[in-house]
Amino acid sequence: MIEPSEALPGRNRPEFTIPTEHAVLGASLQPPFPDGFERAVFALGCFWGAERLFWELEGVHTTAVGYSGGFSPNPTYEEVCSGKTGHAEAVLVVFDPAKLSYADLLKVFFEAHDPTQGMRQGNDTGTQYRSALYPVDERQEQIVTATRDAYGAELKRAGRGEITTEIALAGPFYYAEEYHQQYLHKVPHGYCGLEGTGVSCPIRPVAATQSEESINMSTNGHHDDLPTVPATDAEWRDRLTPEQYKVLRKAGTEPPFSGEYVDTDENGLYRCAACGNPLFRSATKFHSGTGWPSFTDAVSPEAVELVRDRTFGMVRTEVRCARCESHLGHLFDDGPRDAGGKRFCMNSLSLDLDEVSDVVEATPASSKR
Ligand SMILES: [Zn+2]
Image 1 (cartoon, protein in one colour):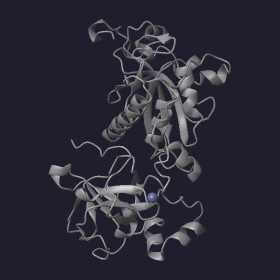
Image 2 (tube, rainbow, N blue to C red):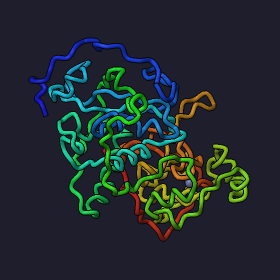
Image 3 (tube, protein in one colour):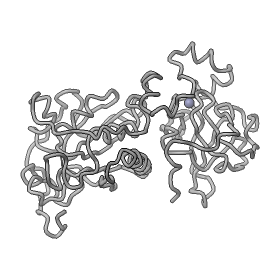
Image 4 (cartoon, rainbow, N blue to C red):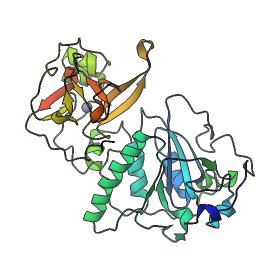
């Protein structure tokens, strides 16, 4: 990797015009992006094939190729290829978190290339082809770390080497020249050097709306003993009591101090009442005095989905089950400081305490900061 002091100076503005429209999806290539959509940045070797991988996913709004992770502002392709900018060839992905989670994208990322190759990818050699993840915020960073560790363990089991993927908070993303944007659409038989390890990443499936069958397949059977996720509203009404339905499927809130888990201290694992997904360990439960069961953290960042909620004239963070997307409660930042400051404010109706199983197979609980 080139030293910052030896990197090319770059320039204040791009040397070329960046196209406005995605050649395949028709969406805008540049911000502003629709409200509530999430950004993610991936580097996995040559960006031509890497970009196509993502624009083909359901729930992806737009993609673009560019340069990130290095030092030289507004570089050109030739400069990046010289290895003197420090940048990696990168893909910007803008997606709808209601249809696709960041963890889903990480699964695609890890399975599509070989993240153990250091400063190359296949025959493409040089720092610009390194594997890298540039999370855009701390939440993404936590998911990255958990996923990297989980996939690292799978690779080790398969006799593969250590993951060399660079992980750093996202810096600027410099768009590449028009010629490179959606390259494999413009040049359908163009070069694509992407090749995965064949080892599957033990995270949630690609599309949150996929059938239960594919959920079971892509999580290596971790969910084999869980009930299937209903596909229709009628099935949901069948499975849940009217009170549960109102909370879980209509984002309702049970009256305070009315739920069965407000004051419980039993050891165990709190699962999603709708689908059995492990959500919270009893060790993270605390008495908040609010009248709702409260937790300082979920069993893993992948267990729950956080969604901005603007109902009732407030901006709050809604917490949903990541497996079945049922409403669980809200996340506040007035939790115990020594435990991270978070308060997962849950409805008892959304939870099922499993007093036997307090061990979770999935990814480890997120690290406390
Ligand atoms: Zn669930």
